[in-house]
Image (tube, rainbow, N blue to C red; front, side, top):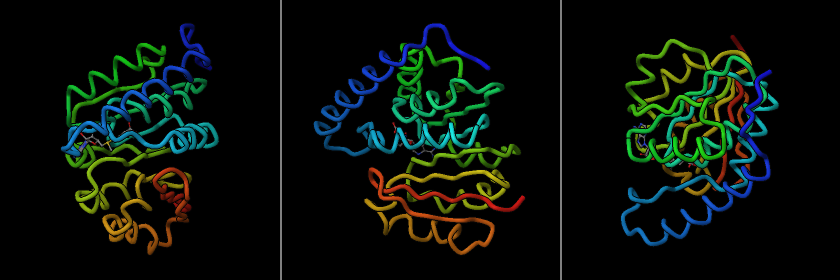
Length: 203
Ligand SMILES: C[S@@+](CC[C@H](N)C(=O)[O-])C[C@H]1O[C@@H](n2cnc3c(N)ncnc32)[C@H](O)[C@@H]1O
């Protein structure tokens, strides 16, 4: 079991709350959506941590780090796990650098490999199976990821996708690739902006 001496749960919770509140104000001030941090809702972040704990996950992939709000919560859910391989991807280096700063501030930086890489390139080169994949990037490209996501998921793997109720029209085709595949048990959850969860039930 790995514990991290500098990690303090109360500090973590207040840090996350403050990060969320500050970035929410920042986002409302940005006219260009690409300039916004667009964090998951706090309920969704806690749900992700809960799934990481429940799944006993140690191989985790996050696509869309932004400045690290969901990354912090996923790392929180992994903090007692050993042999962790948690990769969080973003194409924007300055956001990744900020996420690293936040992870360091709460004492969880050793748990996360924050990579600056395009999701498509990463998935094309990947040969790993992940226990948990969280997808929260640009929805217009999700269909390009389907084939490689199928390969990265196996028995017991969980895929979670954000914004499936807030932007249902933009993810319909992508979600159908999982809903219409008997390899997965799928549910849409009314948490935050809507989370889609696909559990892989076959090797
Ligand atoms: C909605 S935000 C992620 C929010 C983050 N999950 C959170 O809750 O704090 C989407 C992020 O995906 C990143 N992104 C967009 N396209 C990407 C791609 N092709 N590969 C990797 N990251 C990408 C953007 O730079 C942006 O920071």
